[in-house]
Length: 281
Image 1 (cartoon, rainbow, N blue to C red):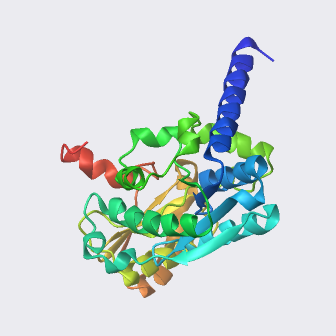
Image 2 (image 1 turned 90 degrees about the horizontal axis):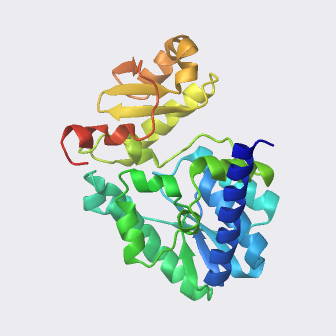
């Protein structure tokens, strides 16, 4: 192993050890568990460190939660015997969330952490934790404010673990999420200012499912009212045009009038590009 790789491996081991120390200090945890890369890794390590009787992974279910993520969440719960609970959240009933302002996530996370706080107290769990990682500090995340207000800890972020490192450690643990594409809430497909409704969320989810069935892996269907703008991973752009062409009728049947393929491809944080243009970031 080269000196550079040895140094990287040593740094990763140090962060992993710090994560263990942080979880031990938490004593017991209620983990906000979406089934994504970060939350699955955190829940699995928490069980290893604290034991099943001191960990509860809680999934908030609503119309904005992708079904594909829910399936992965349940698969990991059953495979790795992670104590698990589901709770219905009702952020869409909050007009401040439904209006889809730039701080929409604050209202969603306020709803989620309020409910998880109650659950943690009910089960005698000392700490509520989320899966935020070190890379999240550089993105626009209004939900972080809600987490701070509710005393939610971010053990992965505190340990300095970024997404690539979490994927690497997840692979070592045999987690199927290690190379899973990110799958944030469906509301993130709607540009700020376009009202969040169950109907629009359902359109997005059905459209993305139709494209996955055609073999695309990492994608977003951005809802622009009457138009669906499709972003796919840059490495899939070459074949995306043919896939989208075959899927146009299915997408139009969902209520879209136009189907557009974004030739720039999917990029992390695309929803927040408008904030940069408006000088808000």
